[in-house]
Image (cartoon, rainbow, N blue to C red; front, side):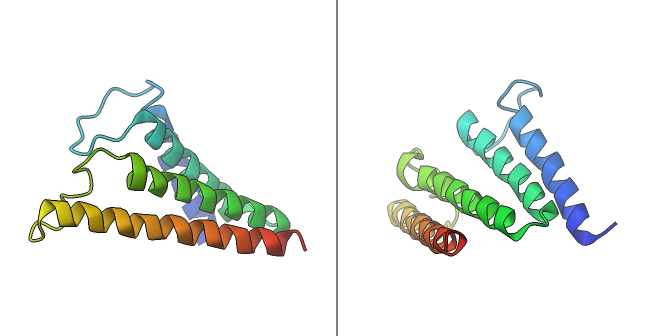
Length: 129
């Protein structure tokens, strides 16, 4: 079995488990980070998409799925940037004040959103030439 197939299988299984949790197919897990069900469902769908990307043989299909993947990543990081409750990302660096840590994390996630959207635009331009 090739490495790509192994990554695809691992992505499918992990994505299915992440999708099963908010759908109520698994018992609730007591986690320290409280993510919304929509975020968990979106993350699981992104992992399943990564599995399909690993198995894609057609370049046009893989580029289109790559664009969807980048937009999904932009959506997830956009949630962290704009909609996450205050203090969600402030626990990462304990030696920086909480307000500065939260603002810095949101700024970096916002830059990630802009980078994902930019890569998607360039990828789609290339796809539709």
